[in-house]
Length: 166
Image (cartoon, rainbow, N blue to C red):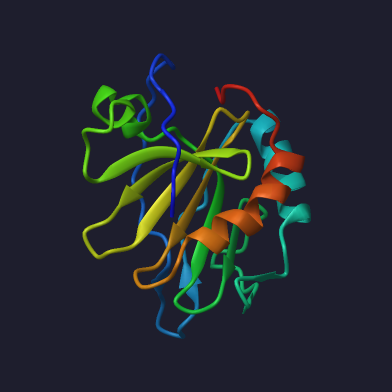
């Protein structure tokens, strides 16, 4: 995947409650923590949920548990989307903006800017930047994330306007 560099510093800091996305439960279905954004962001997330594809990268939509319009999933192991998450701390880390962090990089795909973070297990977490709500997408290890981000760009652009999430 090719990212263009964007400076993402200067936004007010928020803490991210890191959660595990895409873990398997005993019955094989994906589970994830449901974000709890304010009412305005929740409304944007509901609009995004309605715009999301029923298939992503050839994988059927199979939403994680617990069911929520703030989360979506595709395939197994699941690609997990969570809308209304808090801003990741690395989004304002100068090392990331300057390209000096091997675990995180800022960039854009089809008009949506992302912070890409690599997990120890090889999975990638992408969080939208410069949008009125933060949308997080976790892509399991071994999957190509380029197509995922390309396919999610149109619904994100239509439902989550440019701005600074609060």
